[in-house]
Amino acid sequence: MRAMAVDYTNDPAVLSLDRQYMLGDSLLAAPVFNEEGTAQFYLPDTGVWTDIQTGEELEGGKWYEKKYDYFGMPLCAKPDSIIAYGDFKRNFTYDYAENAKLVIYGLADGKTAECTIYDSEAKPVLRVKAARSGNTVTVTSEGEAKNFTVESKQGLNVVMA
Image (cartoon, rainbow, N blue to C red):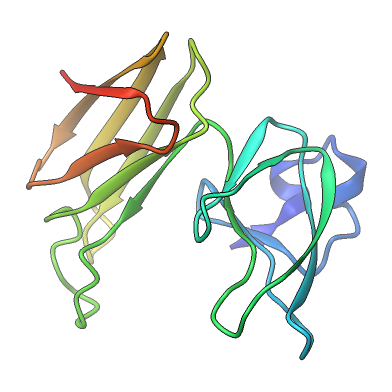
C-alpha cells in the first residue's frame, strides 16, 4: 500500500491525493468516506483502467465521481496488468497458487504484463507473463503451476505456451 505519488511522480494531479492509494503492483483503491456512498477519484493518464468490481473501463487522466453501495468502492486495475485472484479459502494460509484465477486487464498490442504469486512465507511460487500480439495473448509460466486459469477482460484469445 503506497501513496499515488510514489508510482506517478510526474503527474502533478496525484501530489495532493490523500484518499486513494496503490495496492500492490496493479490496483488503485479509493475508499468511500461519506454516508452517501459518493467517491471522487483520479486515474493517472496511463491508458484505460478497469473497475474490477463492475468491469467498467475508465479513461486515465481524468477525475471521476461515482456512487457506490455499502460493499463497493473504486478498485481499478491499471492498464497492462495481471491480477491474481485466490481460491478465497476461509483460512489465510493456504496454497495461493492452487486454483488461482489470473485476469489480464487492458493489455495493449505489443505490450507484456507479469504477475507473481507468493506463498504464506513470502516466497515466489508462480510467475506468469502475458504478451499480446494482435488479438492473441501468449501466456508463459514458471514455478508451481497448480490448476490456475487465465482470462482476458478484453475478450482476447489466451494461449498457454
